[in-house]
Amino acid sequence: MADVLVVGSGGREHAIACKLRDSPKVRHVFCAPGNGGTAQEPDMTNVALGDSDVEGLVKLAKEKSVALVFVGPEAPLCAGLADACATAGVPCFGPTKAAAELEASKAFSKDFFAKYSLPTATYKNFKIGEHEAAVAYVEGEYAAGREVVVKASGLAAGKGVLMPTSVDEAKAAIKEIMVDKAFGAAGDEVVVEQLLIGEECSCMAFADGKIASMMAPAQDHKRVNDNDQGPNTGGMGAYAPAPCLTPKLRKEVEQILQKTVESLAAEGRTYIGVLYGGFMLTKDGPMLLEYNCRFGDPETQVLLPLLDSDLFDVALGCAEGDLKAKVPEVCWKPSAAATVVCAAKGYPGSYPKGLPISGLDEAGAVEGVKVYHAGTKSGEGGLVTTGGRVLAVTGMAADFKEALKRAYAGVDKIRFDPPGAEASNLHCRRDIGRRAIERPTRVAIVGSTRGSSSQATIDAIKAGTLNAQVVVACSNKSDAGILERARNEGIPAVHVPCKKGTPRAEYDAKLTEVLREYGVDLVMLVGFMRIVSPEFCNDWAGACINVHPSLLPKHAGGMDLEVHKAVLAAGETETGCTVHVVTAEVDGGPIVVQPKVPVVPGDTPESVKAKVQVEEGPALVEAVRIFGTTGLPKGGDK
Image (tube, rainbow, N blue to C red; front, side):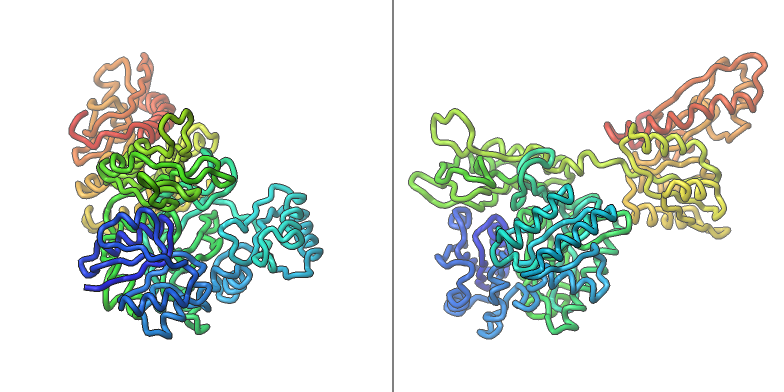
C-alpha cells in the first residue's frame, strides 16, 4: 500500500485527502499543512509545512517515500513544486510552472486562446505605463455599445476580476489596478475584455499531458449573500452535476479542453493535473472565461463525492503520463451533490476568529452528509474557527433536491458560538442551487405538421408568463411547418428522418438521442403523425405530453375531423381537448388538463374543430406549467 502527500489547508484539500484515503491502495495520507478536520481523520497526519515551501515539501515527500504528491492550491504550482518533484523523482499530480502560467497570467492565457482559436471574449492586454491607452480602449468599447470586464493578470487570490457597470466604473477599475496597485504585482499587466452574457459553468478535467477526461459540470456561488448580492468570495457553495450544461454543450466543452491540452503539449508545456475551465454558456456556444490549474473550491467538495473511480489511480495515472493505462474510463456515480459553505460572520471583510464550533457530530450523522473543514484548528476544549470560510457541508443523494435538503439539514446542526451567545456568528447562503431549482423547463416540440398549438407556449415564454424554454423542435418530415415555425422563432430545428420500414423503437431511439443532446426535460407532441413505441414511452415516462381533440376517454384513438364527427353523431352537448401523459396505451395516459367547449345546434365538424383548437394552445401552456411545478404522473393512475 502507498502513502501520499496532499499539499494545502482548505476544504478542497480535506476532500482530496479523504478521497485518497478511501482508496484501497492508500495506507496513509500526509497533509501539509492540513487543518483541524484532516487532523481528526483516521489514517491522516498533518505536517507543519507551508504549502509554498517547495524545498521542504519535496524533502518531506522523499523522507516519507510517498507514491504521489497531490497539490491543491495554485500558488505552489506557480512556484514550481511540480518541477521540483520531477527533479527529485517523485510523482506529482499538478502542472509544471510553465503549464501553470495558464492561471498565473491572464494576459498569457488570453493570448494563448487567441493563438489556438479557443473561443473567448475579445480582449486587449495593457502593461505598466499603458494606463492611458487602457482608458482610451475602454472609452472606445463603451462608445461602441460594448461593456467590459477588467482583470489583473496575475494571481490575486480570486479577487482580481472587476465587473464595472459603466464606463466611469471601468476607468476607475483600471486606475485601481494599474495606478493604485490594489493587487500589487498581480496588476502589473491588465486584461480588458468584452463582457459575456450567459450562465457560468465550472468544467474540470483530469489531464495526463495528452488527454483531458472531463468531470461532471458544476456551478458555484461567488457572492456572499443570497440572490447573488454582496462582495465576491472564494465561493459560498456549489452543486453538481449542473443541469445547464446539456450533453450537446458538454461535447463542445470537452473538445475545447482536449484542444487546450494538445496545444499546451505542442508548446512544450505538458499539462498534468486538473484543468479547470471557467465557461460562459452564451447564445453562440461555450466561451472560455479563464483557466485555473487546480481543483476549484468548493466545487471539489461536490465533485469528488461523485467520483466512482479510485482517485489515487486517476491521479497517479495522470502523473505518470498515461491515465488510460491506469483507468481506462473515469467513472462517476449517477447521483447529485450540493455543498453549503459555513463562513464566519463578516466574511469576506473582517470576521472573528477562535470561535468554538459545535454540532459537527450531529451534522455528520445526517444521512448522505460529509462535513469538510477549511478554516479550523484544534483549540482548548475542541475545534475553533481560524478563517473566513470555515466549513463546507456536502449532501449527496440520488437527486439534486434531496442532496440540497441533506446539506442544509447538516448546516442547521452547526454553530460557531460560545455558550450563551445571543446572535449567531455563522453565515451561510440559503439559496445554494437556486439556479438549478428555478431553471426553466426545457421543452422539445415534436410534430409532423404546422404545430399551431405550440405557438401559445412559445408566446407565453416570450411574454415571461411561463418558466420554460423551447430548446429544440423535431420532425420526421423535412418540410414540416413546425420546423419553419421554430426557425422563425430562433429555436433549433432538427429533421430526424425516418426511412420507410424503420421499426418504431429504432426510430424513436434516434429521436431520443437528439432530445437528450439538447437536455430536454419535457417532450410536447403536437400533430406528430406517428404512434410512439413503448420504449419511447418508458424513456420519457411522466415527461411526454400530447393534446387530443376530445374529452378523453371519449373518442380515444380518433384523429382530426373524424373525432369531431363522432362528437356530433353522439349528440354530445360539450366537447374539448385533453392534454395527457403519453403512455404505451394510445390516448390512455393520465389526464393533465381538459378544457371544455359547448356543442350547439348547427355546429359542423369544422366549427367544432375551430372551437377546440382555440383551447389547445392554452391547455399545453398549463400542462408545461404543471410539469415545472408539481411534475406529471408517469402512468398507471389516471
